[in-house]
Image (cartoon, rainbow, N blue to C red; front, side, top):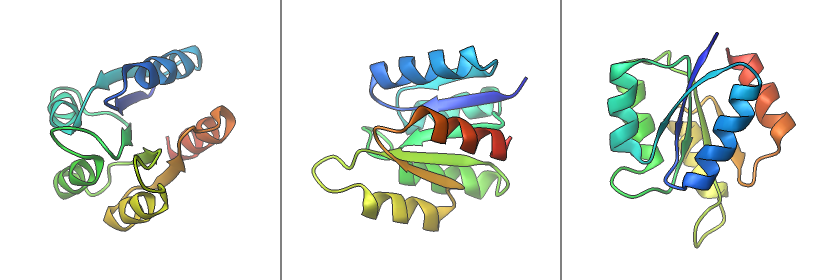
Length: 120
């Protein structure tokens, strides 16, 4: 079964995504920021990465740049609630940096699962 790495600084979001994805049969690994996410990816490369964009230590955009530099074929879904700003700009930037798909938080379960099925 496919392996998905979730990188998000909000534990409730990670938990919600983990439960949703595991109920669909995916193997899930979690990380709370980009530094930890890249470490987890090196330990056990995932088939797909779902990353938040606004996080402490290493933001999602930096994480996307680093992962794409190492593996241009890596599939990444970027998500953002936008923080103090609207998420449009962050999501547009993530797409330019190589995110395969982007979603505004809160993400709709069916849309996310459809995107994952297409990418894996």
